[in-house]
Structures are given as structure tokens and as C-alpha cells.
Image (cartoon, rainbow, N blue to C red; front, side, top):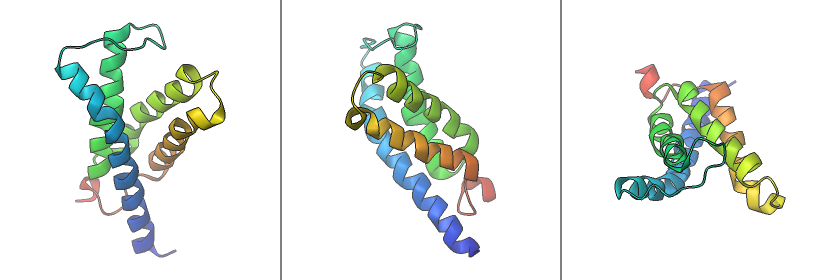
Length: 124
């Protein structure tokens, strides 16, 4: 196996999905910063706690994944967030509605299994 291509593939996976996840998380971060804590409560923790957890799973952890710092561990909150989005929040929705959450779920499971690759903070 060509390790350079493998590591470039992991880099592309980390950066691509990490940046796309940020497009969902940054609006939630702005909502949190503005003091608006209204948010769904899909798992019974309360809206403000759910919002904070969503910001961690959609902003903080994707940044760690993008730079390759503890990407396997940083993927876990993202995986949990996307599993809740796909199978709790959108449980009764058609597949087309929950498809994006499932796509992110699968990508971050792959990152959790494969790690950061050689082009990461962890390898420096």
C-alpha cells in the first residue's frame, strides 16, 4: 500500500468533513455566544446543555479533527452528535432528510477507526 496516498486520503477526509461540519456548528456557536439558549432537547438533558454539546460536537471537535490532534478521540463526540441527529431527531423522517447526518456519521466513524495519518499534529 502506498502510505503517502493513504495519508493524503486521510488528510482529505479529515479536512473536507471537518470543514463541512463547521458549517453546521458555527451558527450554533453564534447562537450560544448571543445568549440564545433555545434549542431542541432530543435526549432529555435540557435545551441549553444540548446546545453546548452540539457546539462541542460540531465546532470544537471538528477543529481538532481538521488539524489532526487526537482525531480518533475528537471523532467520538461528533459520532454521538450525528447518531442523535440521524436516529433521534430525524427518527421518523424519510431517509433523504437524515441522509446528511448518516453521511457525517459514517465519515467520522472512518476517521475514528483510521486515525489522523502522517499529515497531522499528532505525527509532528
